[in-house]
Image (cartoon, helix red, strand yellow):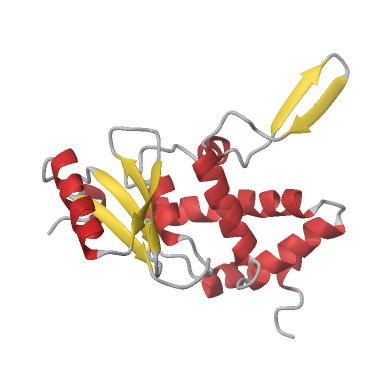
Amino acid sequence: MNQPDELELAACVGLDWADQLHVIYLQAADSAKAESRELEQKPDALHDWIAQLRVRFEGRKVGIAIEQSRGAGSVYAPRLLTALGTDRSRWDSAADLQCHSGIAPVTEKSGKSCWVHRRLACSNFVRQTFHEFAAQSIRYSTWARAYYDQMRGRGLRHPAAIRALAFKWIRIIYRCWKDQKPYDEEVYLQSLRAKQSPLIKDDSQ
């Protein structure tokens, strides 16, 4: 039986299922560019789309993840799948993914001057995916909420605080993706407790 890392997929597809329009995100294995489109909630439209996939990828396997929850929910599973893909050699480190996504800031120096600004040369789709995921996570994750509040307490405005949280999330998601293990909030909280992290100082209350 093949292990997950032995599967060769022609593409990864994230399908955000909705009542009227489905949003589709596709990452072909032979392309670095993610694609997105909308699809009507009609049987004929779905059948035509599936037929197009078969023709385009010549019958090769295509991985599809479906998000059926209403609203954003606590995860962006389809979009994250599309952003990461299945080729685990694609990113050598979490830092590579942070730069690709545009979440990692850029530091520039000139003479005695030094300034930090948002990275512009990046995938807008991937950046928006991680940014929105981080924003939603503060509603469901205790440590994420604590980290966001910590950043706000340091004077960061909402967008900057969310980017800082997304930067931290990418490190976690990258490790889970690389090790092929699902994220477990309680396991991560236990790790923070062991380190006596201030992010869980009110966790027992």
